[in-house]
Length: 329
Length: 276
Image (spheres, each protein chain N blue to C red):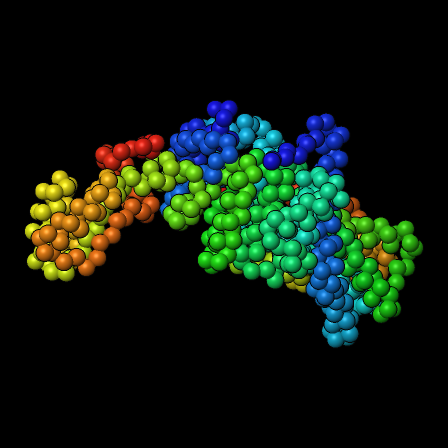
């Protein structure tokens, strides 16, 4: 427990008839970038609001940086940064004025608040825009300023609630870059996102949440393997070749080959990717079967996500692929 | 490397922190004035002046004050009070904008005293209204109005007006924190200024209204402040004697204090439970 930057047990929160959090458990190790992944309404923002002391849970217990969020809120607040879904900065003031103001509210002396503002403007690539009012900033610049404001005291734990929602790809890359830099300096980052790609890029570990519960957690790779292991997809030229090719590969590789007649495609689960690829090419050539395309692919996080959150299937019923460090609940 | 800021551990340092936080929040508003002086001049300073000219000259010719006296002298204290009423919108708008944008949640996730955020807002709005009152007083002097009963009573009248404004700050913060999620609701709530402002006596004497409406208007907290200010400035009051008009001074203090006692604690409560 002491090694966890964030630890929650049995968190519950209801809003009227809606259950936002349903006995949610979470443990985030110190220094990790941890992704909370889930569809809209899964409870991601509620988790962040509880952990950032903005919302009291109805039940359960949560600690951030070793302090209880309900009973030691001031201690928690001194150690966290929060960047929510909007850029929570003053639109009229300049970027620099915003940072100085937030620095003063952390009780840095004026001179130090100014120095810190200038450092942050450099660190977040906002030096040129520092004197301009925020309302003239682009979306990406606003988010960077927002991140800078949540980083004034270099917090132990940083909460980022959908930090790239609404940004164009350029702005998103800028923000990703910034988050990676922050994480390298020892801050534990809890990131919520509905973009699988974002979690895949940034997070060391991911918890998939749905309906206020953690349905699975693990590394991005381990989660992907929940949706099955690697596959090789082979697209054939002639539809008539599909059945004989499937029989051939079943015999040669001993694998359960799937057929897709519409796409004239065979899909073969593999473990030794390169060996299997060689074997498939050789076998097809020997039999005179022409392949149009052949691709080795890892399952995407999307597949894992759909697998975990969709269809009402309990995720644990079907974790035949090596579970790795995944804990499906 | 991560840093943890120090936290105040004693009551004294807590108060010092809260005071310093409130100053920073107030300073933020003053920085807004410096950044957009045009908006401030137009909204808080020119608007009331325009209304004085409109009512004093355009409509004032058709107005007579029951019991006699100059309509412009009757109007000026009413205009001072109306400026306080329009302050509700100023407070409401800035509070709801901060809450909607997440700035308020950022403050709440920082080691700040909740009272500091509210006190800072209140101080900024009081400064703003004091400036508006000063401009309007100057404008009144230019059109020939002046206090007739000495500087002390005039100062007391201005103090009662600002006390009412302070009560309206509490109402504005509470409404802003309650309705911030919908800009339409904020606009709708803002129109509350009109029943508060017009179902009262700033522009016309309540005796000119239908009896039942006049009774409601007399009990409007605004009317007590206006009547008290008229008495203290030595301007015509146009009021018919009734308990609430004869106790205008008492009520001009009691009403705002009651509103303050209700709405500041409510605002604090809202602030602490802001997240949905």
